[in-house]
Image 1 (cartoon, rainbow, N blue to C red):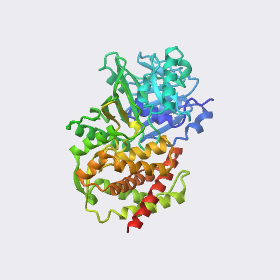
Image 2 (cartoon, helix red, strand yellow):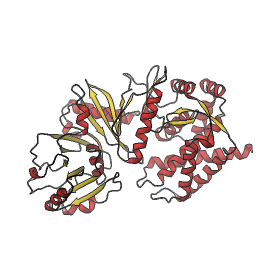
Image 3 (tube, rainbow, N blue to C red):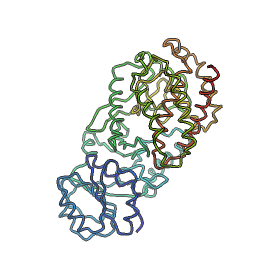
Image 4 (spheres, rainbow, N blue to C red):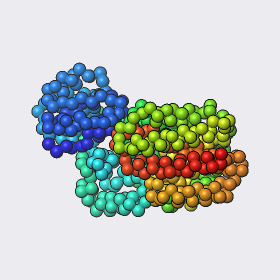
Length: 475
């Protein structure tokens, strides 16, 4: 049997179409059982496999009080399925052989990632690629991708662009309940970036324009990030900004609905510029306070991450020697902050990049605030420079150093330094300490480490080495 989907898509689909489920039944053929049992991330749920339909029916009869999602991957069926389709049972059917008695059938097409896992899901009846609302194409490859799909859908070639199709059979879907509040509303689903912070994002479109996005946590760990984003977006609504635009947030169950802040005309957003820095200064002007460093939650997080790096093993192809050296350098850098009583801190995005923001003529529109927190000033500026230099431009460390020199000389940054008594090198070192410890502790425990993570770790090692060498020189 040709495998219909990848193993890790099983819990993903179950959680998207029934966020309340913690039990997934999979019906498949005997030759595919071993393939589908290789599920790395069960997303806080239990998965049971069945080959015989009679065994599945018995199991369903025993779980009538549970929120169960059944994923059918079997080509041929013999049972009378109309007898076992219950109100609380959601069926995701890849075979198209189940004949439900209800009229509530939803058909979806999907498009895969390069590794054949599902990336986008959209209603099969859609004639426009609205899933592109979930794609911030900051480079030429992204723009080419969007163009191909827009032209393909326009020429009625969408059946050739999809990776597959499945049906969802249910009396009511959570996603449809939200959709009923919109006039001629449509939606598409992004399954989330693979990694520790994975969540699904659903784009709702009304009148031909994406109006809002539902961010759905797929694990309890990610639930904290979604709650954090809702908290900080609600907090920031109290302030007035001229250069900074942020979404309006509303909690819906465990998820959060955020408004679309994409402007009608977007400018190239791959370089940190005047509007970015003015937007950050606005944020600092209204939210900066001086805080005792060793009493802050961010300092406790750094200590916890450093401890995790020291004791945790590596479960992927990350170099053990490199991880140990980075941990050593982080420890040296952390010692620099032992004698510091206080630092000026402000609400910060925590992950400011071109793919988490849009740039227009007069404003910076920033979304995805799930890593927000109170951080030392200029943290977001350092992060933007490092992420774009490493992941977009693939620059050597010498080029990043030059960008940092130019950043320190910038008139807006100079004003921030003077107004809030900021030590530029000190907050830069704090950025390296916090960002590297946060991600390295998670990368070490990520089963499939992507190539970009290796690029980042290598550059962080160079930056930390340089920082520690300069500290020794000054000392």
